[in-house]
Image 1 (tube, rainbow, N blue to C red):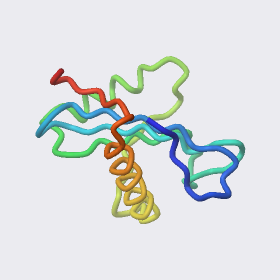
Image 2 (cartoon, rainbow, N blue to C red):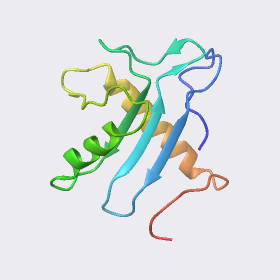
Image 3 (cartoon, rainbow, N blue to C red):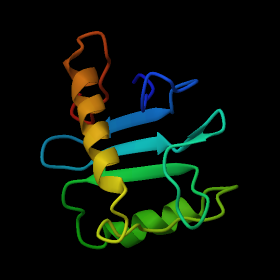
Image 4 (cartoon, helix red, strand yellow):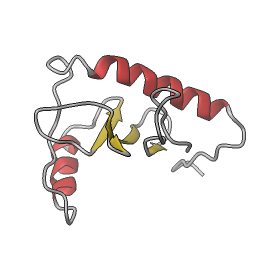
Length: 116
């Protein structure tokens, strides 16, 4: 999918990945949080990527996924953000949904699905 652009003055888009696991399953977004020296969000720890998982996570899967993510070579931290404590995420999540909606409406965008 096309990169995520915060505003027209951004020097380059942030990498944006989308995966839909199918109807009534999870939707995954991976968003780059730093591009050409511009940070999309600032957290207490430097964070390079944000993995967003939407819809209900099956019981036991959250811990399984975070354990697998932590095993990725070169990854130094993986943690779960509390949306209630990180209010700066609200406007970003809305912009991501709009970006996703705009891209999925475009017939030239290819969509991956497990239901092929």
